[in-house]
Image 1: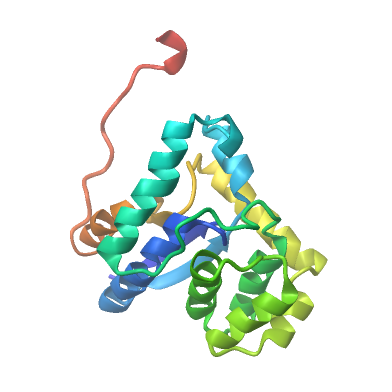
Image 2: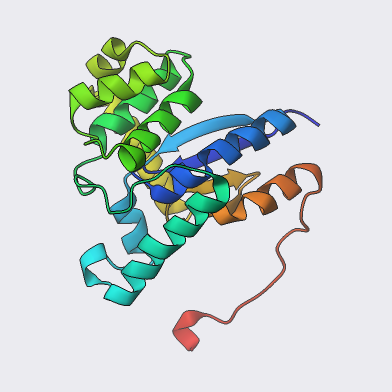
Length: 216
């Protein structure tokens, strides 16, 4: 069997991508996986899946899913995290995502960069559209930020970001993070144990059938 290939679909501001980032790296190292980064724009993916924007959710849902669940998983995984929604969380993802794409094209340590960006947002409350703060995060990953920032907003780089988003829409993904192994998506960092299981013992092909939601 050849090297396993995991496509990693995530937004660069995703709390749950951050919470699973180190564990994902451990799994890839243990199983000699090639991790393909697919940073994407989250909102269109969530909307297609039927999810509601943040402001349209109930306070109870927000406090649980975007509060208590984050706290518990952070404690469980030993991940440092702030105790509030990042100040600039709704800013565009184009610059930080572009940096990830440029790093991959240059053959740099994109795993380290992606983790550093996620960590800086959720531990240090940085603005992912602030070049000075992104520069610090890139240096923390051991990378020279200059070529990453210089190319991040180039048209072909942003076209790749859109292509990743389009791919997520075609795959009918639900959100961030989603790990796609052999065409089979695993949504959420709480499914990393199932992903690891599939690497050494693949699951049977899908056979479960649901009635059409249009017939319900």
